[in-house]
Length: 356
Image (cartoon, rainbow, N blue to C red):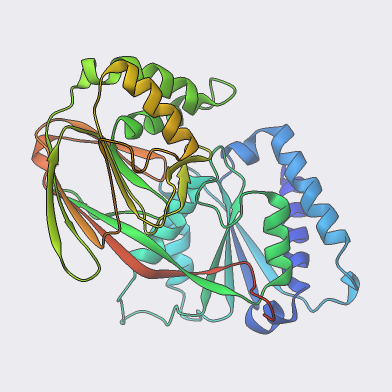
């Protein structure tokens, strides 16, 4: 990707956004936060494929030359954490109305951008941020947390405009650590190990690296890292609590149900936003892996599925935690860990309903 290609992409996206009278009325400026090393940006073939789709969509906009102007600025990230810093500066600007932030990258980039929003929840001392809207372009190695799975759909949403939804989050508070956020799926255990390892190796190994690592982890994760008893205290939306103790090899939670990770693996295939899976024998692990990929694991023996507001996890081993594909290792001293659903965290541009 060169500078000219990036300028062309953002110009085309700005033209697409300007095609909606609702967008023109609502937004006067677009901030593009671009991760230049994201898989859908740094890999030339994928980037050129996406830009062609965007270019064709922009060219198809009726009356393109007469569209009212929406100005735009481009912010390039320089390393981990920079997307959150950039977004924080944008959110803290005194004139906060009429802005659309378009995050261009993968799930890690989107998580950083969203984290800047979430960290300012409840802050009444800063500017009014209620009218700043986010859209997450699917241009990474993993796009499970984007606002569209494909570039064509993303362009259609941006062009039509007119509909907003409130995207939630899961706030993760580990003992001795700052609060962390996930906006798609957060989990501990074998899948966190797989996503963390996949994330670190994705630029070196072609193809579906998640599946390759998952196949290997099925064999050696438990012998190497061990699986001990996990204590779960879950609280539902009505405040009712329940206790669960078992040798869970995976515990996953999202802001809502019906969520994927690892490039389309359906870990939360129902309306329930919590899934925990007990460790089993190796042949059953192999069989269970297929069910997890296909989203048919809920209801099987050894699987806990529930709709929860919060969850407290206790564990006495070192274990990986992943948040939207970004991993960190927890030590026994970091427990208990609290997972809490945060509703209505961010206003995002979404598919319009009929009549929008």
